[in-house]
Image 1 (cartoon, rainbow, N blue to C red):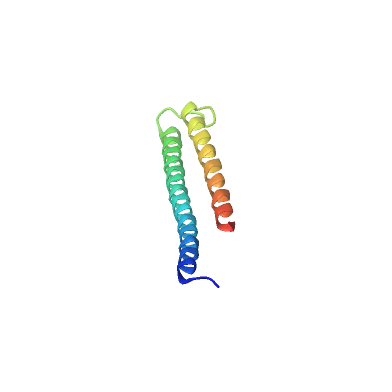
Image 2: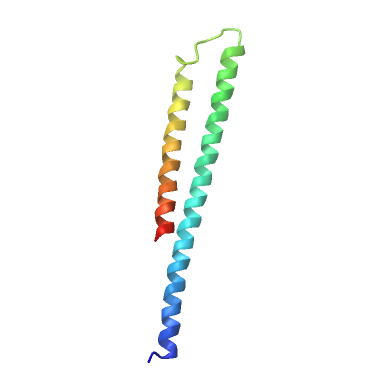
Length: 95
């Protein structure tokens, strides 16, 4: 027969594991929000750059612009990072 103290220890152990999982989930969600915010900023910067290029006095080729290419690459990397974090979140929730 288990004593009261053993049951309390077992309950605390379960609570500690659940708290750890919730902390991991919260941290990943915050990282995902930050990454999504960075994606939004990069899209905004990209849109501003394209607008300036198309409405400026010297209309330039958008696909050939170095800054546009860099912004697109940054967005791609951020989207990949977001996907990795989403899969990490799924794994933590399955534990």
